[in-house]
Structure formats: structure tokens, C-alpha cells
Image (tube, rainbow over all chains, first blue to last red):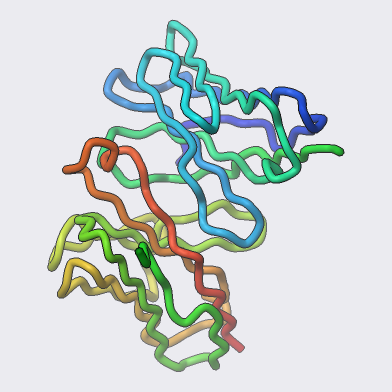
Length: 109
Length: 116
């Protein structure tokens, strides 16, 4: 079973920051938080991952709470091309990925 | 710079037939994975392989067979296809020996399989 809980869907206005929450209250000390997204009909795409500290790359930022029980993926300036299903995944590095249902993000023009 | 490819991209077959879906990666990644995705479901892991000649079951392995004689190839075989195996199949690879490889899986474009 997936170890995360995400909202089923979210809307965000184009140009605004999209904040996608994820709960992972049973996360273990050696488990990372990963985010992938899947644009319609394509294979999933890795976005970012983190262990304890907040992380940022060219695509997004990942904010992990101090107790590591939840996190937020931030797309700073959402565009229509960011419309996708976003998956929050918790796992040990090198382990297989178990996907949940994810959050369907709609970017509104 | 082919990356990870899947063939065929689309396949229609009949119940009871054997079907093999191919997956090829050019990065020499040690890990390879097969997932299926059905309407209303996220991706579900079928089988994975940590290296050539090493394979293991995922969440939904029944009705599927895999092999890994070469690092770059990971074929998935449906020995006797059923309608419930109609799905989109994604192959992925990763390499934990590389700096970012432990964390990132690279996915192929998918194979859309219809079993009539």
C-alpha cells in the first residue's frame, strides 16, 4: 500500500504558485520523499526528492516539515504545461516505487 | 541518445495469445521495472530486476513472465493474454551506483495493449 495521502485534485491559476500537499505520517528515518508527475499519456517524470532538508531544483521546491510527517511540492510559476497527475512517494533509496493515486493538478488559464 | 525505448507502442491481440513487450535502455542502468496503468488506478509494479539474471515480483505479477539475459533489455511476456491485461505498460530504469541514480527512475513512452 502507498504510504502517502494526497488530495485527489487541485486547481491553480496560471502564473501562480501551485502548492501540492502530501501526508506521510508513518515515514521511517531512512525513507526519502519523492515527487513524480505524469502528463497525459506519457511516462512519469521525476521532479525532486528530499530526506530532511528543503530542496529546490529548476522544476520545483520541496518543503518537508520538521517532523517529516508531511511535505509540500511547490511549482513557483505554474503554466498550462504543468497540468498533470503528481505523485508523492515515500521509499528507501534504491527500492522499488509504489505509486498511489496522486493529485490531478489543473492549471487554469 | 536513445535513452529508454519500448516496442511496440500499440498492440492489439486476442485472448489466449502470447504477447511480448520489449524494453531497451542505452544507459547500462542496473535496475529495470515494468508497471501497468489502468483507468482509475495509478501505476502498479509488475516485476523488477536489479541486474541481469536477477528478477523479482512486484504488486501484480500474476499472468506475466520476465527475463533479463542482457542488462539493456527487459522483455515482459503475457503467456496467455486475458482481457483484464488490457492496459498501458511502462518500462523504467535506474542505476543506484550513480550519484542521482538511487533516486530517479527514467520511464519509457509506454505500450498500449488491448486484449480482445
